Image (tube, rainbow, N blue to C red; front, side, top):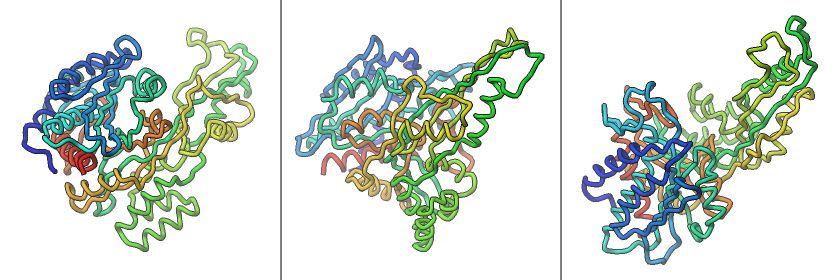
Length: 450
């Protein structure tokens, strides 16, 4: 059942604009204001609303459209907070929600207030139907995802886990992105995401006068250790999600290509498998992190620039680690110690560890997504995929809620491009927004009503 009428396409644009205009930069967040705006839209339609604050101003909205209860609930989810934006760097005001050149401009337009707007419209449209759904449909619009969800989904999963009882599946950010390999178009459905394991590296040595350099300075020792990380890709291996994805991509070319890719993956020849699947060189580089634990140097601290003539007795580095499903904090820290060597102390930083996660890639919601994409974009296939980053899925999957990243976007035509998540001039293409609404509405209706 397709979304009836054009009014909903106009409505999703309007709601997205209003959400962008509510500044929910985190910190401080101010997500309660956005949650109250959504409550004002949804309550008159008979949709049950709860706004739960984990702290003053840190509001989380849970909306529920009641069904018959013949099947378990489905949940749409997204976060209300956004990262900071410097207006002086932007072409259009980051919190203006303006429309120019076929795009809605603003911070959060792709990460991820467009999903919140789409979900709100889906709830409103389904609430108008005379026949109730077989499932309850929930919307969880949470706070604080950009800082790990400690005031948002993490807090809710710990303090209000019963909110998610019996939820059969959730649709989240992290997938839905179209890509091309040769003549074939694929849409990703995130069934896995990498975990986080951040570390602090420390070296110590005798301090002294800058006029007397030595080879064992704390700064030099640290620099040598960090250089051994090379390009930051460690411990390559193939997850179930990405192994399945690569075979499906290759199979679109031929069965023999699929067999070759499967054989290469079995030997852990990752780059060769990507090439055999048909990926171009620049795409191989972009997708490599989905097959490796990775380490990125993001911070350095040593000495005092006001005392540039003083050799510091210690030096510290901060490394952002992203780990594949199955890796542990102890296992990853050991990889780092093997790379860094004996002259550097490496430890988990500030408890910042969460494991990588996978949801089943053969679930019924996946089959529904595949069917709907095939209808809306003939010839395209949907493949399971991994997110290189971390989302709020990490709080729900341990509760037994399978989470799938799928916010579908329309492929850009030649010569058109937009700025995405966290970028200056973040914007969403209107045609992509409307496509996402149509596709997600059909997925939700088909899954909840049939």
